[in-house]
Length: 292
Length: 285
Image 1 (cartoon, rainbow over the protein chains, first blue to last red):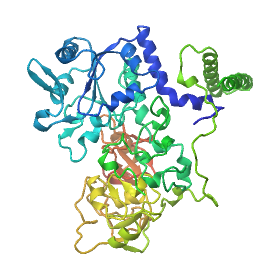
Image 2: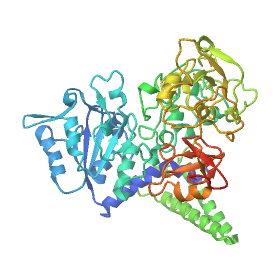
Image 3: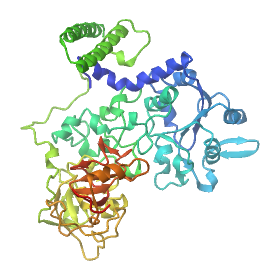
Image 4: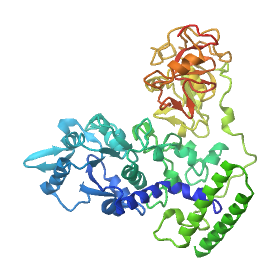
């Protein structure tokens, strides 16, 4: 993809960045309203937040200061306890539309007591209660991460908390943005699209086509090795890692373009196989991750 | 970095000049529009790059840096082998070879350079170079085994479907205690009649799997008017003289599949659900 001559090739990987910048400009110039947003963390590893913190410019700061009016964000907000929970209640009870972003699966065992998000007026609020209560009025619901979208590692065998993905709890349309964790560009791109143009185009699994349209295999820098049957037999070799168990051919993301950690690197670039973290059935159906 | 940026700017300047010269010589309206758009894009890039206001990743100039990673010495390559696409069968045939489960488990697990074979519905397939079988595994299925139960759970009930995607290498010899195979319960294919005499002649499967075509006939006109997938009509599509129901097919969206529309006569694609045959004259709809 790195061509010194063709400017089009250089701009292609950054199309999402262009429309994230466009959304930021739209909000700054007052063309689009700053929508209220609740980021609810349920049963997950908080990887989504770490990936967001490692996002490139624009990143978390742009999200918080410009793109949306974040009223609740477990990990990052200054408020705590009942005061924090009241911010959700205020957002939901106001007439303004709000965006609900959920990251994490929803445990069902013992009425959802394995993921408690608040204690309010002597009552325990579980993730299950919160999602059921806050989703019907939300203008947009985004499932951020593989746990929310498909169950992911939280719902993997033996799934002691009986966790399920978000679409098993609520029937409202959900925008699925999988990834373990979800890439900052994918989640900010989806939010940016909502700000500027409304609902993004979704595929049959309700994922934005921009980020989940084609497989990693199709854009892989090692693709030519696959086409010529040149395979790595152990890690560290420069050829295609298909024989080592690479899940690139069945995983639909833009990893080769957006990459991770400020767009610095990604699994294939670090000489390891794709483990299919954004695929349905991850991690159980993607195992074994390595085989040789 | 600076050197690279300057050379890139020079390149853009040259490109703008060349495009303008090209534009002055063109006559075709569409081509001119295309190049004007391209010129605008280049000029915009050029201006933004010359005086960047905000750090925009699309404007970061790639610098050529020698790779610092210790790449092991390349292994000798004699001649580029054939592209594996050619190994996908065009004729659906099965060689007269049989494999037992023991043979598959010993010699065809896809490990240590072995080929990767897997048994599905009584047929053994070579998945060594099938992209979706990374590490000789596929969604929890392993090469060197009889993966029929897993395939059935995923909704694959049709060996012809599978044969279009990967080469068959022989038959699978089941042990008497094994109850799995082609005679299992019919799945969501919902087929009802026997394979017609006008079916694809190159398919030489023995035994004939559960692939049947109902005795209904459609004209192209009927497909266009009644089965176009619009206004809650079912979406049917004709391929190789057979009409398929793609209404609920996951690979079609809004009655379209990679640019193919329902109600058209198409040749060569995967089979979703067989509905009937296409005929020149309207017989029965």
